Image (cartoon, rainbow, N blue to C red; front, side, top):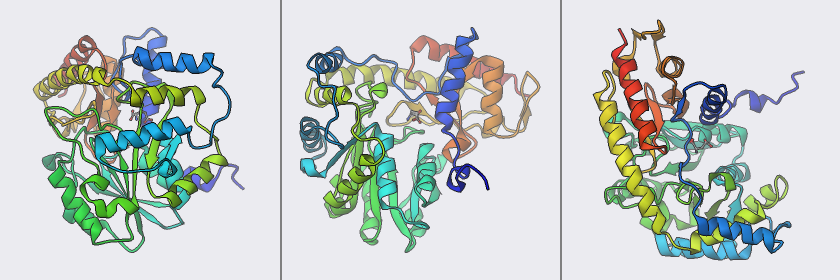
Length: 400
Ligand code: GLU
């Protein structure tokens, strides 16, 4: 009898984390590596947020807390949803976990029965399908094409829905493409959902504040109030507040679902870190002006990366609305051989050869369910990005 579970055998380790670890190891071994794999801001946690964490330690706020979040944080989250999204939630409708990942996982474990389907627009963040599998469900991917800026259409969503569909996982701006759905585009999707009352929406709004060029962020329960009672609106402090390591994610939704998620968390991890929760209160209630400063840097970097990648032979790179990712297409690089002698038959070959021959670490597209592409996280210094893109250009020029 195998020791490991059958469920686990269907799940792969997170490729974003694998690439990040690989780049870290190579760097530690003294290799000249530029890591564009990790999806985390290079900016430090703002001082006032750090100070709130330090204060929490000094004041002895270091004990267990309520399983799914301290009241102060739940209040701050309700205020955030009202302020930013026009959504009314009460603290009883809020759940706080150790990062957005745990929020999503709790919700899936709390709701999926064997055979339940979860629609996931591809390219998707690597962990959605595997979390669905871990929770016993069936991931159903629908592809957002390059010529549609990687976004799905209402017709695609309509035809993917079956009587077994339980959730649509929606993510805008998107990891890995940075593409954002406009209000009109999102409304087309929510109109479809209104015709299928058994389908719930899990909206992963983690990149809400990383929106550029006047792009107006929107979330399903805001666009279509008719969906409020079957929407879980998920967010977190990791990306906008540069708090990836603090591990605080949260969600709001119907009380019955929130209670079920609390049950999962009470039997698995208990409360998220008490100190991080107090820091997150400050993040949500405190000044937000640093976000615009960061976004200015992100836009500058995005523009440079998109331009330089489009100059690379065989690469096509759209300009996305948000997040800190771009998702170039490498169809023009396939079936060629790199200067180092590697035949590039798919995007994984491309990413592996790129790392080995140039020291640039990116995540290959197959991990996100749409090929042939790779993901660049441009949340790193301008100088490192320029050097990395030059290396990518040279790598592509060397393909024959
Ligand atoms: N969400 C980030 C990424 O996509 C962090 C790593 C992870 O958890 O996947 O790179």
